[in-house]
Length: 123
Image (cartoon, rainbow, N blue to C red; front, top):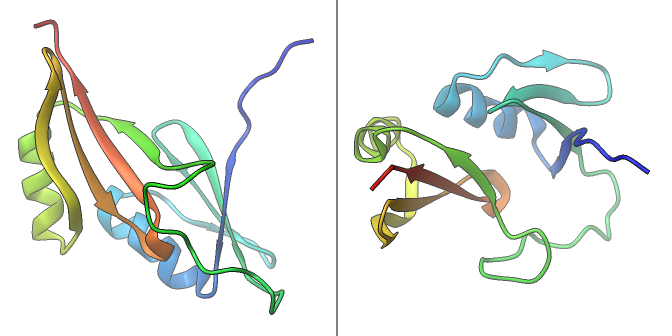
C-alpha cells in the first residue's frame, strides 16, 4: 500500500469569513464552488465547508487530543510574526527557541484553529 497526502478539511459556520482570513493573512488564492471554498496553503490543499448539522460541536481549545494544529515552515520568524501582527493576527505563543536551531510561534485562526510557525536553522 502507498499513501500520499491529499487535503485538510475545515468546517466553519461562516466559510466566507474563514477563507477570507487565510486569504488576508497568508495570501492564498480562493477557489469557490457551490459546496465549499478551496485554497492551497504551503503546498497543501485545504477545503472549507459549511456546518450544516445542528449537533456539530464547538471548536476545541489547544492543547487537546487529535489533530492539534497546522504547522507552517517559515524563514525569518520574527519578521513574519511582525507582518502578521500588522494584519491583526492574534498570537497565542510569541516566537521562542524550543531547542537549538528551532524557533516556533503559534497564532489563532478562525474557529480556534491553532497554527504553528516553525523556523529551522543550521545552528
